[in-house]
Amino acid sequence: MATATKDIAATVPDADERELRVELAAAFRLAAQLDWHESVGNHFSVAVSADGRRFLMNPRWKHFALLRASDLQLLDSSDEGTMSRPDAPDPSAWCIHGRIHARLPSARCVLHLHPPYGTALSTLADPGLLPIDQNTARFYNRLAIDHDFGGIADESAEGERLAAALAGQRRMIMGNHGLIVTAATVAEAFEDLYFLERAARTLMLAYATGRPLKVMPPELAERTARGWDAYRDAAFAHFRDLRQLLDARDPSYRD
Image (cartoon, rainbow, N blue to C red; front, top):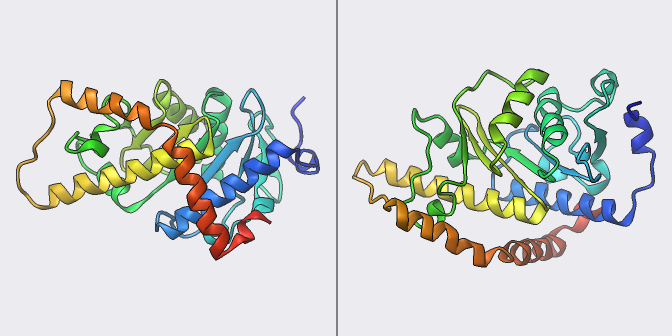
């Protein structure tokens, strides 16, 4: 029998859940500082159970810059009564994150945004991320592209479709929509989002010149992408230092 949301929320968080709450809250605050947020929409989530079905996510309509660890809702993707409750999450958030956590247990952390450059890239007839520098090449053959936007994702079928489109990859450009990244940890997901938005910015600025692009040949792009493997631990160092800056500026995200 599915566990009721209110019963889940009443559970005292264990040490691991507490740290995940703090990490995800930090990611929200950092996203707001980087101007990736959009009004009181967009959503981040992180799984707290081994099967990925129980996860933390931001509540409906609260600004990223104000989110605290204690604000995050503990949800269960198999709980069919979630959207009938007064504290139900945003329908599109439940549709996307609920289905991804249900179908892809390896996607522990799921970050979905409409950041400026990534979203601009997603609107092009060909939103592919061309390898024109080492940051764009980071995602060469390592990025899904969804060409089948079906409107605001607020129905289960659309969530299932997006989860299927993402399967086999950790990051996706959502055509006419935005970006989504998944990873085993909050730090790694945040790093991917950081570099994906920077890569989109580089490509869009290059497009804006109207001059021909110098696109890497496939073998060089692949070698460059593989070269990033040696820098995987940088994600944890980067996120650690960003959290240190947050702590100095406003540690209330930890509350």
